[in-house]
Every structure is written in structure tokens, then in C-alpha cells.
Amino acid sequence: MASTIQSPAATLRAAWIAQAQASPWITFSLAAAAASVLLLLVAGGVSAFQSDDTDNVRYALLGGTAGFVATAFGAFLAIGLRGISSRTQDSMLGFAAGMMLAAGAFSLILPGLAAGRELFGSGPAAALTVV
Image: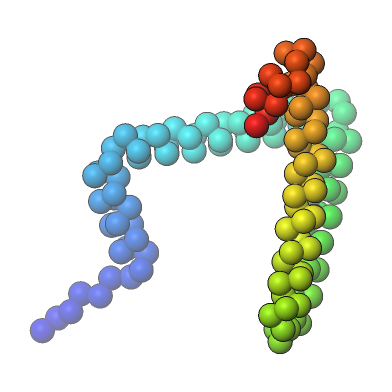
């Protein structure tokens, strides 16, 4: 008796094909979105490297590298925090949540409200636009 054992990649590929055949509109939409993102990435890369001012690319790479290094450093610190108490973990998560709420409010919502007020000339209309 011969058993046919498929690799996980073949099984995943077969599942993707079955899903694509079952939902052709969703598959087409996903392919169109992926092609659009790829086109925008290529266009952005070409315009970034063909412009005379390449400092922006250098600053973007430095900023991305700084974010990567900070995230990796935090991950290495988190590895050492295996045995913390539930109360300490709750405090740390609460602090992080508050920091993210403040970042969202001060760097996203307030400038959005100001831009909406310039567009519509009204505070309530700006709030309805942003929120």
C-alpha cells in the first residue's frame, strides 16, 4: 500500500488554488491590489533614486534602520522578562497603551482636525471628517 504524502507547500498551494477557483472576484481583487502596491513601490523607488536630492532616501533609510534597531533591542529585552508577575505585565501593557493613545491623539488626530478646519472652515465639520 503506497501512501501519498504531500509536502506542506504542495498542500498550501492546492488550498490557495481551490480558494481562488471558489472565489474568482476576491482572487482578482487581491491580485489587482497586489499589482497596484507593487507598481506604487516601483514608481516611488524610481523617483526617489532619480531625483537630484538623494538626502531624503538616506534619511528614510536611517530612520527605518533606527526603528529596526529599537524594535530589535526591545525584543531582546523582552526575552529576559520571562518570569514577571501578572501585575507588572498589566502595568507595562497599560503604560504602552497610554503611550500609543497619546501618540495617536497628538500626532494624528490633532493635525487632522487642523487640516479639516482649514478645508471646511468649521470645527464640527472637521471633526466629522476626521472621526
